[in-house]
Amino acid sequence: MKLFTKSIILIAFLTLGYSLSSTAQCLEFAKVKGFAKLDTSKYIPDGRLNSITLSEGDNVDVYKPFFRGRKYKVVVVGQESLKKVDFQVVNFQRQVIFDSKKGNTNNSWEFESEKNQNLIIHVDIPKGAEGGNPKTGCVAVVVGFAQK
Image (cartoon, rainbow, N blue to C red; front, side):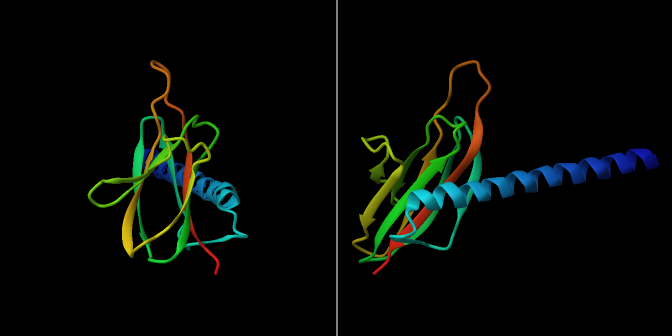
């Protein structure tokens, strides 16, 4: 019985350690790739770093406030293992304001907010080839505002 209990505790610690390690790697990816794509010489990050591990076929929503008169840049980047990362910016009525599938190939969007508003950045990882194991990787959503 003691051996069983020790084994369960060891497995729990190893699982937790792996989970924390992959989260730390995803945050590091977000800092390096996300901030580079944001161009921090022109845009100040909004202070929230959003990163998550997703698989092909997954999607996630990130809620962000935007303020009138500010120029923003939204960047969504994924690890190389994810062949394609699409995103839309929508309002709370799900009306599409921006769609990366419509001609934008660099997965970023610059705009000036005409009003104070909360928007949703909807990230979608398209499904891969049929029958294969879905690819998994880190996705970062970085928002910055222009320096005045």
